[in-house]
Image (cartoon, rainbow, N blue to C red; front, side):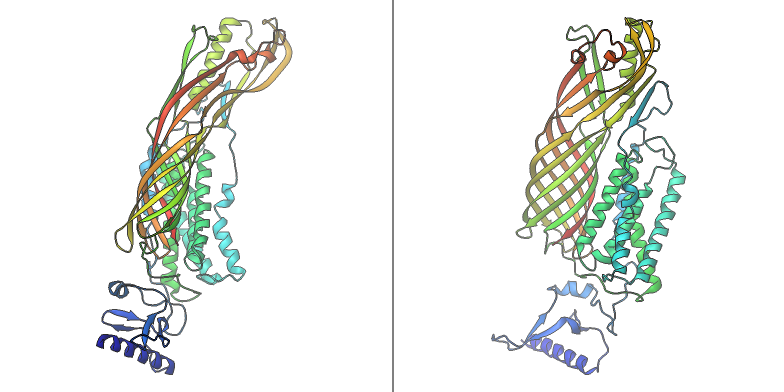
Length: 550
């Protein structure tokens, strides 16, 4: 009772002296608990035993937490309190960069015939997009536009511009210093400056700028939008065949680290100048509100790297048994996940995951298709030397892309106010897009299989595809989450997903034959070869996620 009265007396004196302008201290400490004038109010309405009660107006917290947390976001003169150097560094970029280094084994070229072994055979990819050239700057551009439009965030325009410029300087120095030292060949064989990805680093630097300016001070959903855009940029760099997964992971790590360092350096230089507001809260307690939404990126490691199809190339007569092996590399996994928790330990939620698995030997597959056809022409049509003058295999899709939508219970195990272990048990539906190669042949038209004419043919057909059925999927996983602010966390996770798939190969070798020999039309479906293969597909995903709690 005495302690309670002393606390009330302390609060009353603090408020009175602050109102009279007779005190210049920012906060007050009583038995290890730090109070601030603006965080104290008196409840005069209670009819309980104590007519006067001290109420903490913004957060409830423990005595040990209060002693260690920063006590105010407002300075003595009423201005925004300056950030301390590296005050809000998360260092989340470091493990992402290291993950990229570990994944650098994915550097072998897999789409192009770099040595041009057969001048008649070319393998090209039709997937091209230039969207990533613009999305890499989108979060930073949106931040600048909002600032100029008067949307109040962390800094005024001058301070924001300086912090952004510093972030990009750090990023450019790190990316270019590593690029031209490591000299990693790009997957398309164009240049030896693949690792790390500059586009991805730029995108994650831009995302960190928006995160600092508006996500941490106004609403965490700005951060979700920014990091989702940056993650999509990294995925497009892989799909465009410009970067390996390792390049994107390391680029993301450099981008986050550069943004945080750029802001930390400007906090050291400018101190309180140009600041509009501080972060939403200084009191992280991940287990008080474990409900969350997250954006993730990772590497998928599959239990089966190869699919080998055995097929009969003699129209069912068993005279020409062949096989084709498709070799897969580690996949890129992007996902969004969210859960609502009923208490600190149990919740329910869902996840949408996109897993793209590239084929590592499409040049070999296309080469074997062409070699088989060329040998058959030599054997059966020896006088048709110009039957095929150019052969191009166009890749319509060189990834197995799997979409998994699932839901189920989520579990949280508190490890203090900043750390938590998590797990889940999910069930859902898996949909897979097909691999697809179109053949494009040009050559001379022949009469009676031997007489070359002046006419030429130019034909494209569906030559090769692998499809997979839609199936039930189940998965689980374990994660470690670190909360570096009340609404924001970084998460490292290992997920496991399992499906049973039936893969079907379709192969049509001589789709040009009716155009080359118009005198003797044939039913092309007679030459269509199919083969099926059933596999239990298990995938471990190692990755990181940006998390907001609500």
